[in-house]
Image 1: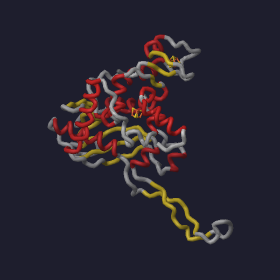
Image 2: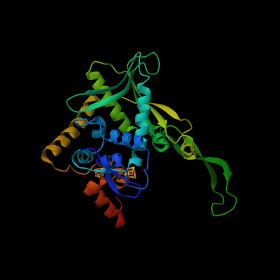
Image 3: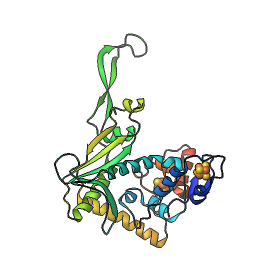
Image 4: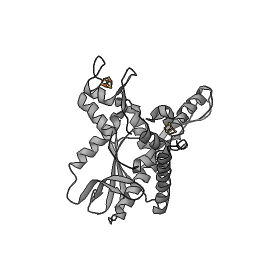
Length: 298
Ligand code: SF4
Ligand code: SF4
């Protein structure tokens, strides 16, 4: 079941239906069409688990399907931005380019963004559109800062005699694109299963805070980047998605809560504390909060 309630800015909960009919607060927290768009984006009416749902933890996917939960509509605006970017592209996808087609196999389903001659004259290029933060983008591009000696030394103070350094950007770090790569590779697999050869894969990532100082400080100096994505073996993909899809299916059939999501899936517990939409329904989130309160590491 998708989210059924909105959380108002004062913390009150209200069914989405009631909010859209009439706001009982002094004034609406957003325009009615914006709230309608948020509500629509929460309920895509899809049966079965999608590629993106399976990349999250199985417990998260289970709770989102099984329980009635509440979301703050303002937290959904970034995802609405992403959908708006897709819509803009949808209206300009023609000629030798296919876009926004949902494909399905026995395990899952996924909608690829763009396929065809999307960069130059080469056919069979698969592209995915992301709207993301400069933090995630810097990680995806492998940007990091290194202390480089300036050739001078401190003449006074506690560090007297020690070499002075300045921070310089480096662009050859580990590229943290695992979730993007897994998602895009499964779209590749779905396309290939349907007879479409995929020669190359790219993410086009729009930085949502590109004009801010924080972005510059992270080495992000452009609003958009094209990031190549490497191939992941089909065997690995089928095993990974197959296992998660089967765990979810069994949990839904037997109405049994799956084990907590993994450390990777919860960003080392951070998602459980702040970002997971079903954290109020999950005992693991409460357990992590208790641990932190008691002064333990997650
Ligand atoms: S418009 Fe905003 S404040 Fe009003 S009921 Fe809906 S979520 Fe709450
Ligand atoms: S709170 Fe954490 S463990 Fe629970 S469903 Fe969400 S991400 Fe998974």
